[in-house]
Image (cartoon, rainbow, N blue to C red; front, side, top):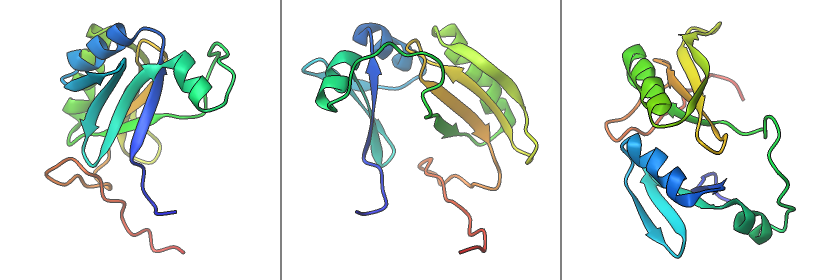
Length: 144
């Protein structure tokens, strides 16, 4: 298997509400057959019915409760951008679950959840430089 992620699909309970949330953050999507596709750099973020996604994956559609074990991350170029994006998410209907602060390893980070509870970490980490297109480069940590 090649080392890459092509799509991340979020199971949502109300597709129009979820699409409106992401579009309020400046994302632009295309809806095809009750599925919304957002181009996100070299990959795609997809919104689809939670019920249909569970069925498609062969999993039970149990109501979410607590942390699901996955956090999406969005790196930005400054501390100010972290603050601005958290404020925009809250204004669009998201919930800031961890206000922005400098963490123990030195980068500035905060977290919000979208209307379906999917967590997003927003971080300014100068050690993970962003290219002009927004792609992140993992530094060589010098370990094997």
